[in-house]
Length: 399
Image 1: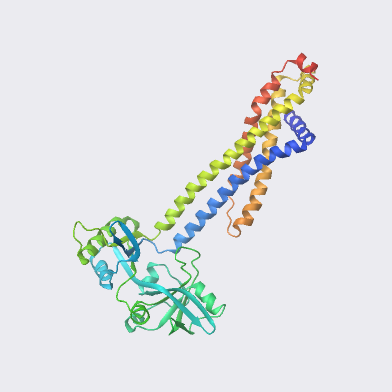
Image 2: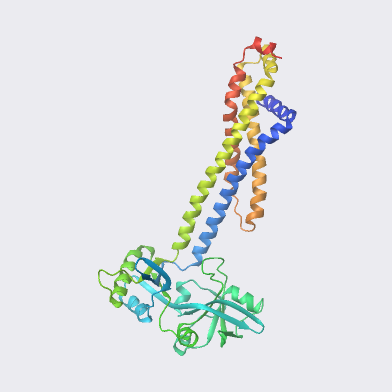
């Protein structure tokens, strides 16, 4: 009963000073909206990263040539040193690497009727389908026979299909890749946005890419799949030992190749996003603190303006506890109303900014109200104690 009465008094006080109350609420609303936005963005980003990681092949190591160096300066060009024989040696001599997929990749152009598109052309072997988790949704992938016969066949990524064929099925159609005629034998499902634009690629047999398209006898890299994540260290050791031996590197010479986990880039992005999110949440909590100071200021002014009211309530029997509760409830009401506005505004803004795929962590909505109520009550504590301890006679004399 006392709480309900105090809540009614609090709401009447807010209505009596609408502009002052609104300005105070805005500070709380902006802070809680910022916190909610960062949390939603973080949850959504984490979900997207997990989805992209699942699109990568599991337990995969990337082997690439090292960059050329002139002294301590690294150039943009790679060392030309990886050969198909290196891939065969690694697979033959390592007990923990179960599959290896050499590849050569370079930029190129594809044409179909009056449509043309620039994209990556990847020369691959059949194992690339499994190692890179490529999944044809129509037709088939590159086969061992295609590689052996240097067949001019192609598997299209989702974006290339859309740009050249629209909604039409590409399987069985003929297109030009770097002015050479290829038959489309397969279409891959979409992998979504990622580094290297995985949907903006065309896959052809490795021998065809090396000999008929680009005229090279080396590789851009290899993907090596281990038995399990526990085998990474042993796989690193095997790859390093075999390649250093094949490349005749002395003990004092650095590796002329790189070995990394395929999901390393996404893991780094994930960690960076988490650090940025923590910083933004800290800034948002500073905004909430400023909102709390605003509530404290409003409550101090309210105590001063209602000194006579406090004296009258004390004179007719209200105890100090009742006065304390009244102003604490009023401060909490300011915080909660600000939280409601912040949650509504933050949800609308986040929906418009992030769009589809937004993940709303509902537990944080509850946390938001608790945070706002806590900040409101904390900010109103000193003004409430000041009101509670006022001398009744002096309060009644106050003009």
